[in-house]
Length: 179
Image (cartoon, rainbow, N blue to C red; front, side):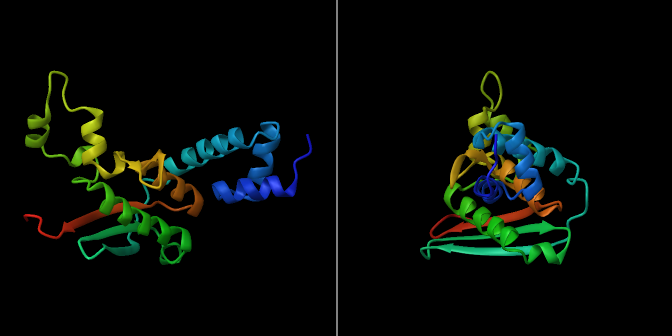
């Protein structure tokens, strides 16, 4: 099957992968765009996993206010200031701030939930996946595309920028909310 430049460009735009990787993925999957996207994401996420042990001390603090009633501050770190200035990294930081404003997570990830909260949430089988999706930022479906979990969105960015990316901390305030 002949792979066109338009197909490669569309796959590159959708995944952020390199031109040669896009062409190879399309060739291996007979020109099937969706299968090529899935392949590149899987390949990228595998590469991203190897980067998570690296230090991430640069980055940005993204501020977001929604309608003057909700305010968010999130610290997103990467390895170099070069990546911190890229459009893709800044877009991720902004999207994370939007996620926090919209979904109101209380914790960064499952390991951050205090034992007393887990104890109060326990049913016969323990805290449910629904509890973690509601309470933990990294477990939540992404508000702009609910087929993607926030942790996977971050892994996609790691794969695209080639550096470790970490959400260090966040805070959310809502007008009239008790402290």
